[in-house]
Length: 79
Image (cartoon, helix red, strand yellow):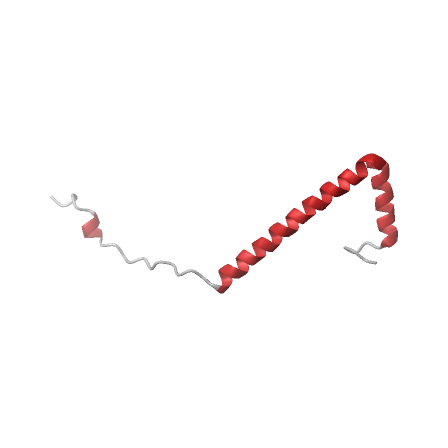
């Protein structure tokens, strides 16, 4: 089992340290919060990726800007 380059022995050590730091009562709460946070990041990442793919597949037409006539825009400058 290899997740993020961490094998089973390393995961056991991390779990033991987490148990010592957070205690047996707070560890499930911490795990639940961590899981919800990771799920939120994963959802946001997928949504962002979907929006980028959609934007690349269907680019919107930008309005072509025509050069403005400087004489018509400065009405009161000629006396």
